[in-house]
Length: 216
Image (cartoon, rainbow, N blue to C red; front, side, top):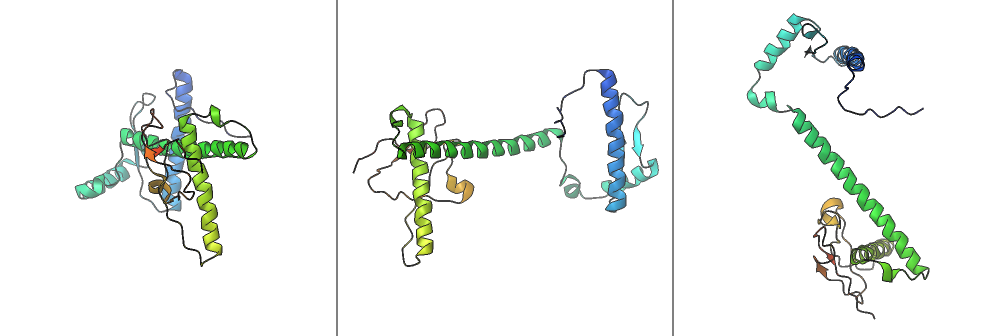
């Protein structure tokens, strides 16, 4: 059975909050002891809580004082090199989640446009119902698939010259995929006169190929 995800929020009920405090305090002391024994780390703890009459000190007052004195003797640069406040930790965590979310959006959007591309290849008349942003992204997916096929062809046939390439568009952040994944996509079909503009996604303002095409 999967463990239920912890909701990180203040516990309003006092009895539940006290039980959670006691449980996590024991777990924290256990982890500190494991670090010192298994990894030979120098560790100490000072913790204040409304459920305690005084500070919780581990392992002893003398050991805590010794480690604090050793820390204060370090230069200021070494003291603050890995220091992290709660605000900076939350900001770093949110930035990481934002990066993961952007990556998932890009992957889902690419899958969605691939599905649309296959529907068009099967003869379904859905192009008229696509927005300018959809057509912009569909053009990127088509160019991506053509480029990957062309690169495989060049790899299998070394005598062929590699294609000229242009950077595709990231419709979510306004940055190029080239910056994010180091990949460049060619505009292989000269009949597709894709031009880059900021008009295709008024909500994002990111550059992208225009939806006007010249039929061969």
